Image (cartoon, helix red, strand yellow):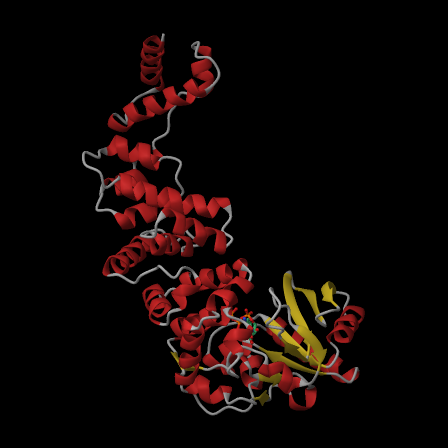
Length: 429
Ligand code: CTP
């Protein structure tokens, strides 16, 4: 990456509505005597040559005023949220059929009261440097001026540009991971995603926190859903094998469960899941749940339960993992045939099926995915009721049995199915 001091030319090449918006926000800021800066992931990614249109702006020193002025000046701008306590606001622009959200935050200094249980930062108004130093890494603490006189100029107070060039993830101060332990997961996420290294001292601080006596206390203080959000990002990365490797080698796995282990068998399962997923790219948006399932596979049931509780997983996600692990176990038994595979996998989500497939050598799972799961009956529950089956669970049981017969004989017509149904009804009587 070349030495850059101004990214106006890069901004001119992003989507033209976003570019226009940024210049307008800069002009309005000037009119109301505010300084506004683009910050965070968008700056980082644009400098790295990636697309990122998540507009995060810090305003020196009144985000609410800028938000109100934007809403007044632009009929296509609506106020979507305003948090007086945190001095933040969110507006949404409606431009050419697009919704463009813009997050606005007042430059602020956060102090964390580490004595309290769930630490919410105390916010006091301050200037840009104090705002940037409260952020996670130097590469995320770059700001770009939006004012018309120096539009695009980079404010680099912590050598973030050097770290971008040298591919380093570096915290801004030694308390960073204690202030916000989810940053430990973010550190490895950015390392795995960008193929960066965690800078030496940052690594040492991370290790110190992970191994410290207060670690359990710290983890208890963060809301589980925040850990889940970061784990989800991490396990959704395309570079999953590397992500899992760093997850274990850094010790960050301890944030999920201290008993997890990076064994050969886990590496192989992850690799296998990755290969299987290649055939299902269109079906699966959230592959992280598959990798989480495989990662917790060898924990005891009660350890698994505590992972689910700690990560605040909703019942649907817990079911996906449990179904997948259980099916994986069953399909390793002897004498498994197409019908048994069907019985084990029916009604399971594709994510559960991929967990199961990553755990076994059972080739019949492919047959289930590609063929048996697609077989449909012509006969319906209503038809069975007409034939005299009482409404209730027997209807489903008979339909299942006919479906099993059809797996071995896919050419069955509706008449054939009715014949089989009649036989089954007689057997029941
Ligand atoms: N941030 C932080 N500590 C966190 C989360 C976020 O300091 N635990 C700061 C960082 O400066 C980050 C910015 O808030 O750049 C925006 O956060 P977020 O949108 O979560 O991350 P991005 O950096 O935008 O990354 P991504 O593009 O992956 O969303």
